[in-house]
Length: 227
Image (cartoon, rainbow, N blue to C red):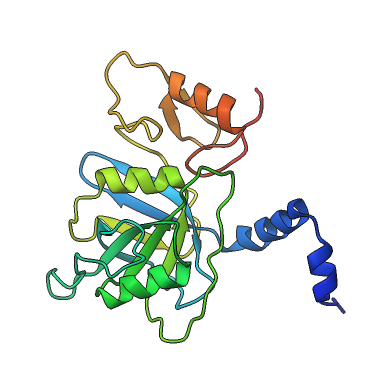
């Protein structure tokens, strides 16, 4: 029978051990968020919040727009209610200055159907957002800083451009037409590097990324070997 750690044991854990526990708890919950149009498709790993409803097995799709103010610590100015009948709208929110729960409540109050919160620093793993579920009726997910910046640049507020899936899809993930690091379109003659996870980037961009941040794909976080 597995015994629960006492408060004193938890407090005695080093930050590294706590992070390892968080990563282990997060990994089975990972899912995907995808932004697409006729000319590009971006797919990123996301971590569902540990409060509020979960995305159903069929996933949900809707338009995506950036919150104003960006961190949604005050009421969001742009309402999610201005859309076609039966259409869903999601809001992109920056991490920082208030709780995850507060951001999701602001999104819900503004009429959005889901909240996408992105990190304010680039890290090798994603956080699992925590908060009080009472009164929260919309799902929320957490994505990396790079994912958030890419979504913010390319989102056009079009119906069904953004889809949130409840489970991993190994066939998704290839980034087309643009490099997810510099966000510039690929041009004829550009040197690209393909990682084992099948994501591709400008060679100079990904080489610089791997040197600075570590051996993992900036999109799906899959470890990249030295070879």
